[in-house]
Image (cartoon, rainbow, N blue to C red):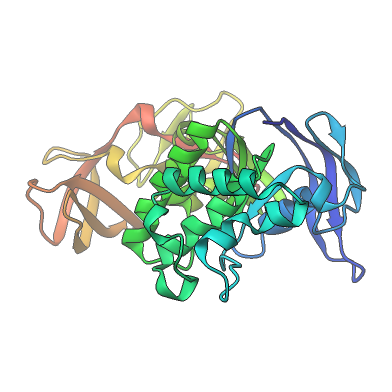
Length: 348
């Protein structure tokens, strides 16, 4: 295991493009940290700098207390699992898993024992003599993980490893990867653009946007207390409702309805009001009109999509709750309301 520390890390390409803007954070021993954000936000670049596959423009990177800015990837005591598996098609599963150990010159008996242990751990024992073409996508991903496991690294790096799998396999592999990391206790950094993966797998999440860190926190902190409108809209399925509101005389008002929540004493004028769809209550005696345009059935619950004061709005209700299109009224749970600055998007 290893602690990973980034101090003022930046990545600027020769053309002047700044892919990562001053990233500073510490990943503790045995922690599972997920870097999440949209395409082009800098998450894979950050991972590649940790791996040594991308040169660091500025800042200090430490793995296990050792500065590794100029250390070759092979000497960083890391193992990386890629999106495309990177398996050798002409080799059996057994040889694929043990290939790195063979290259290191480990004794054949030691390689055989480690391969058998990894195969048992990953339910690959019966496939050891097959070649990758004879395996499913999930099995191939497990082989790639097995190749990483046998090296007994201080740090696991995962670069969108599940993006090539179908939805059912992704769900299964999420559980398997998290369980494996828990069992081994190895520090892990995982990159994904899928916020569901981030929420379900991470001890802590680092949300990136346009090369900068928007927020670092536990899944619960990120979900319930987003630091910006970007985080609020990116994390969560469906995302947080964000609508225009007004602060007047110390109260937040929407569509003329006041008393939603007390506002900061220094705040006055327009704000952005945020609330999760599950924190909205349909109420025949509610004060806020909501026009329901679409009713979406999702099995365990239902989503109502429409508008509040001509602003897009969604409400989540139970699968057995009555609902139909048309205008209804609702109330917002005061404790679940969040306020954001309309210009900066930052939480007030």
